[in-house]
Length: 430
Image (cartoon, rainbow, N blue to C red; front, top):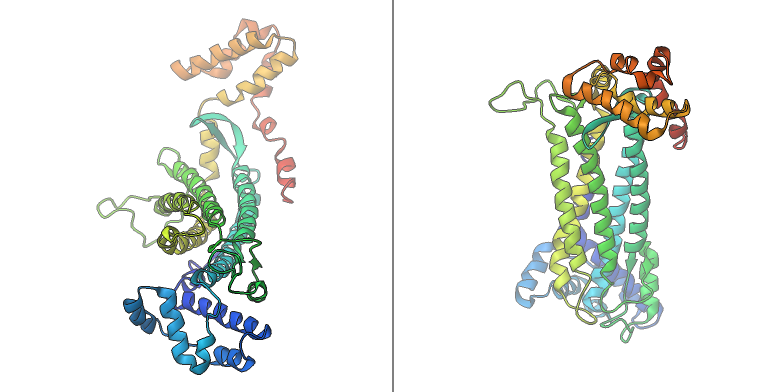
């Protein structure tokens, strides 16, 4: 059972201090690259690495005068470095540092999310196997359709989660890039070696081309991927919410002994965590729309995307990290009621076996359209008048021409609907 409810990795990643510290890494590496090219003394690069320091408070103090956060950051570093500080940020524009640092941070965020997804995947695998053969009713349009198993429901979630892992890996590759190519991307003021040097040591790829910025289709893909994953959790949580309804109650969230479902109704056991998942998914989907709006910037760069990203990138990654951890715990501790699932499966008095009956009639020589009408008229008597479906089938003169009572009874077998469960699970190595 999972005991860890939240972790602080993602939150620490997006602290203001860590953002500036990541920018400092970029500045130090850029200085080392410039020293390798002979553009600044090796001693200066060493001094920059050793003495580069900042305080968030000092950056804010300088920014209050300059109204430029990166310039304030560079000034703060230079103050602490001393004479060699004059070489900090040589040939760079602000976005060279900011976008490269962001590419590195989003790579780290993706790594955290991939760990979350893998943990969720393992819980789904275990619980899918646990309920592999637990029959339950499948619903289409919210109406009883044919039998499935609860394990197959979870296996469907597993398949979607594995696709989400693939999506996250691709989004990580797309976003884990940097650019140090100058004011309009032509390397007019900085040698391409600096970009290659910095990106290699940060473990990200240099973008093959950029303007002053990395192109924001990358970020749109990344946040859209987060939105797809959040929407999957939304879907899974919605299923649990439906199954927890009083009239259904086939499964429900874990409810701790001291938990309260209502301030006035002591009897309440509400799916509040799943509802929270659905709500947060809406936030991330909204952020994806904002990321898409950021794709279209003026010419080689404008700054309209920056204020948006300062909100949506931390918020979306932190929210999805929380959703994955929390919903993993929901599935891990989900309370399942197999007896109620079986009772609901039989709720319609065998109507769910109508497809087997139809196919059997056709196999025995009946015209399919006629056979469909014969079965349907008996089914409607059950739906509308509550008559016994099985007994009516046995008394149907048209059906009797092709099937004996024993033949009809044999179609009322849930096992016939679940004969390929092993085949499906085997596709997942389960």
